[in-house]
Image (cartoon, rainbow over all chains, first blue to last red; front, side, top):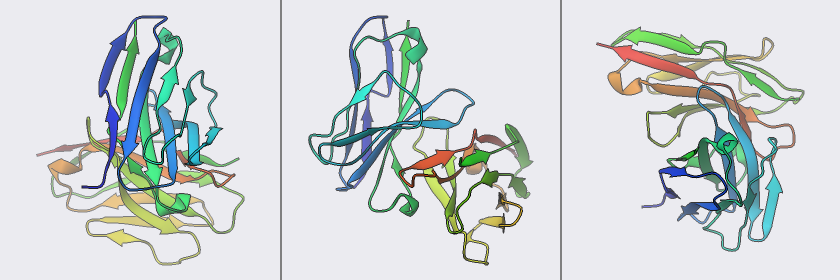
Length: 113
Length: 114
């Protein structure tokens, strides 16, 4: 079944560790996005990609980095996790125009202690 | 700048009743799209309904309908015959100014009681 997968679902990690949040989709979508969602707050766009080897920063400044080496894969990396990175991270993809709507992953809830 | 505002952090409704979630937005565009997304607890966010601004007719999807007031920049979601499965966080969204992604409101948590 075509879908978008995020792993891990939950992650508790110590300060200073390097982490990679995985996002993969099986739909062949060119456009992929990362959003950060704090509890009770709106989603903030932190990165997006329009295709292989294309990545852009979003509206919210983030210390994370992303890569897009394969169409289906859009991982997000934090080189040195800090408590301020504690949040939920949502990955999404879209087939064509943004207005065609997104397919979302289930999210990764990250806690940095 | 594009903004999306949801002024109701929480709403509650009884099963089988109707509830309306509010959303206002700001845009300088003449043609645009608006969305309502549903985020159930610990589950994927899914698209509920989409409205194209140049269409006068309000969008409807089964029990979900919108009241789109273009001049007032208002886009409310009406859920009829509420069900326990409707309990979720609902986000209003629109396209950002650059047209590169969606921007979201802060969400409204809807609880449904039996």
